[in-house]
Image (cartoon, rainbow, N blue to C red; front, side, top):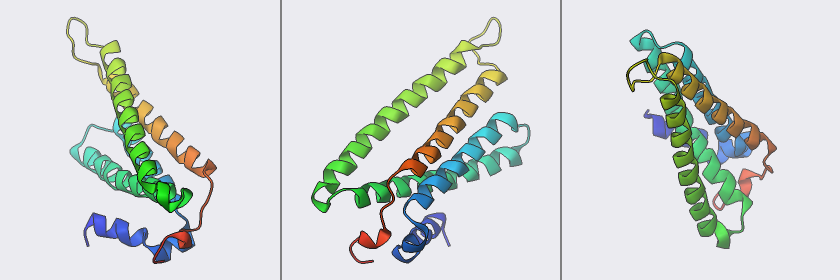
Length: 154
């Protein structure tokens, strides 16, 4: 089974009713946070980096699917297009801002006489991203729960 099929199966209507729409968002954010924090600390062997990328690679689609589901369940059906459009805009703003913050951390600590960031700068940038992912999980815990059975076809 492919990863996307597994994610879809976990996020199906039947499981969504039992687990809630927030579960994929929270678990995906936590997987990303663990992968990012691990990459900041343990990166001397290829297998470490591969494992960290696997965690991030599974976490991101889970969090994305959870976000979309929570959003669609929280708005009236007639406003779902506007809600998804706003989600896209906010995601783009967050991605751009996050990339610039990480770049600022990287250029803030360079190897003397070069423009190459230090290992500590990379660690700090990855840990900052892990903290942002954990903040996303925390915010999802505060979100208003909506039953998955309110989706058509479930």
